[in-house]
Length: 207
Image (cartoon, rainbow, N blue to C red; front, top):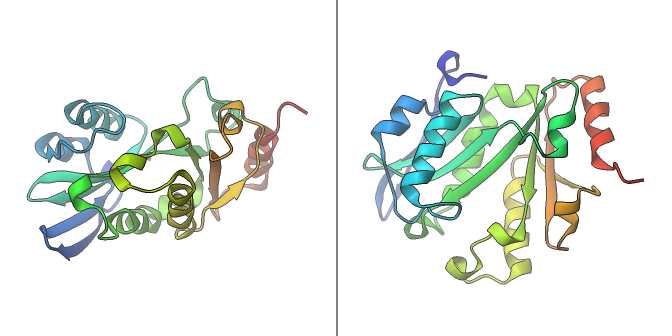
């Protein structure tokens, strides 16, 4: 899964902020050399988020970045599920989590999230994995986007569906904690029936 042995997929977009290059996988060394937009603080301060992206890219995940004038203005992070999540219990490590997607406030409303998703899911390695996204409403920037809860949920649903992800039911307690939360899934074409069955077994554990 290391980016070192994979070709970089890139796409250039023009905006009123100038040229934005969307690329992935972005190597940890490149991320280290980029700056990061201060608005990327949904999960932690921007400088800490950059450190996290460097670590993910250097370890067992990969990153897609949107770059404007050598500054990270958006990113998507893929990594294995956390050790305390039920999704890490599959016998074979064929499940990857789309752990975060974030666009700086000044660069929203130019379809940058969709551009990053398209680059991410063009990578052939996607077909080897079950990609999941655990959408928790408490992570959503309702204030910054000025969207209502269900409007934001619909926006995220459309974004995930644009790359073939679908909603799946589960009794995972964190997903079930709020009715707006959801699990989005895309099963790669090269995932074995055994790994698919193992994933399905994780969807409902409390029956």
